[in-house]
Image (cartoon, rainbow, N blue to C red; front, side):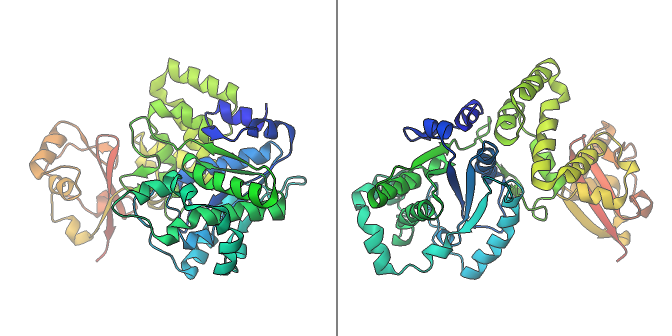
Length: 423
């Protein structure tokens, strides 16, 4: 099986240039994907193309990841309805410092024959002078050609319009491809399907300036079965940075994948082979309530991003948290696995001022004290995973695990943490 065959089986080929399939089957290719540092961390929306680079290397090809210190100063208009806020050089450098170690988790920089590279396009874009850029790059593109590109045309026809700054982005990315062709013999650019216009511009520049053929291959953008944009939650983006999104929250994001998406995501975001995924598909068909495929997905992706140790820890925490075993956990362990659960901090004195129904209303688990009372009577409220039965109970320090936290629950999934402090 070639890389193209692998990507095709996984549903990861949206479009490609003529001949790219044969290229990947007959030659050792150097290919690149760009990552603009718009934030100090990558997020799960970047995972699909990052996995594509990792798969490429596993098939013997040489991957290059561009950390876009140059293009990041401009901003890609692709898929955006309005212009991005411009970042400073200092912000870009800080963001690059966060992104580079995340790239290193997926790519092998010490491979004997096809080591990965991370390069910063500011190295060649920043020294360009405007007149030289217009002569050496701009002259090869007509305005008519640029207006045909979807990323430009959509903004051009909108009320917001497009600034000359973002209008020039496509030329900068085309220059990236030419530079990588000259420096490293790079002949393939990959990316999401929204990058097709940028990729073909680079192919065109290489053809006109060097008289050589280059290629592009794009991957479909991920959407969920329910129509929600992948990676977006009520709490915001799911980041690869463990400080921004704790490993437990990261694990839970994948564990909560819609059953309709699980098998697709196993193909997209893991290195499991056909036989392993087929076995999980069969297990899901026989016993969907066990959600074995979702557990494997969560474990595999968390291990890729945060390491096997953090994945195992998150999985153990999830088992305890959702199986009524909170009482066996220490406060520190609970806090580590409940990092994304809403919380309220109160003093010991404040804690005793209200009965349980009032706290359920205060924390948002119930709309009112009267509704909370009905939920308690119906057996739907849990205190540290034990079913609450006393609607008049006042919470105290003795209810707090290690004297520090109380976990209130509505049903088995909706939780709120009360953190207790002395004063």
